[in-house]
Image (cartoon, rainbow, N blue to C red; front, side, top):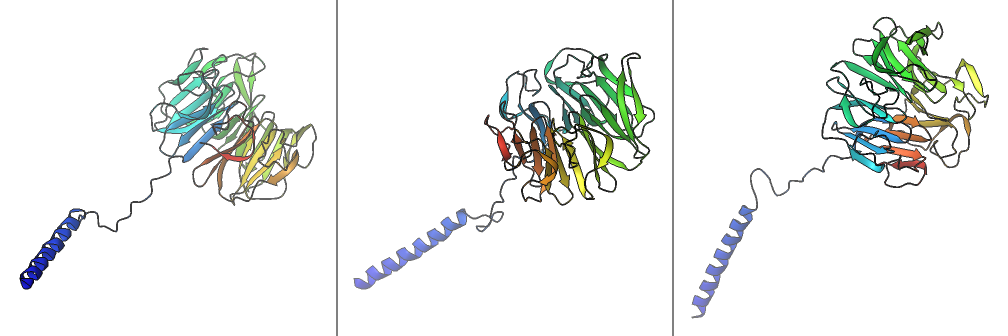
Length: 379
């Protein structure tokens, strides 16, 4: 009897082991071994383009979607409302946005197919749609598919097409005639870079010469003149009343208003009409101008700032007004920068946007209305 009981127990254990093995096979498949590790999802907050106006910003993520935050009084965010937002909101569902630029209260963008789009304030014809009516959502401007570069001033726009021709529309603060459709300006088809500001506009030709652009109210057109005889200009940036430029040898040059040291030439001279080299470094990669401050990047990925820091726009609370380029933090992974109004923004190599300075209308996009004197992550 005892032997029968032992045999029964052995048989029971045998079938139990077989059943467990079958159960284990059910949870394993040849396509997904039990030791497979699922890779982490790609970051959702990675950006590749950014522009900022007078209290609002427009950005493009790496997936080609369009986002906006900040002041929205005239529909400059493009979300179909006139409500401010202190965090990034997606504009439409398109995934083919390529570049953006912001004026005072309006926004412009180009899609990957070369079409031009605009929204926001339009009293001076800055949207280029042939009207003076504000728009709170993106509208296509014309049917051309060859727009390449945009530069937004407070109330006017300059643009370069892929064929190298230069175009302008809008007006300036001196009451020059409103041009509410794109108008070709300049001679030839070899323009490579352009900037627009309150009081001036500048362009670089293919031959690396620098040209000034101004409106002539008597002929209702635009006139251009060569700024100097040098032919080594590479990149341009404009503040409210000052200019920053990088030559082909990597040197930094500035001129214009300097009440707050925004020229970085070591002085606080009110105005400098001479093109002045800033220091002797030859590794400047990018520059951007705000209302009373300037930001710059070097080729080593470091961030530099100069000018007024009243609202924390230099990105370092220990600084006052600085009249020479001053390093901000110790990071060496800055990829691009934007200075606008009393703010600064930057994109790092990991694709995330950081903002600092004034935030009373949510222009930093960090879900608060508190000024930030150090770079703060944009949500």
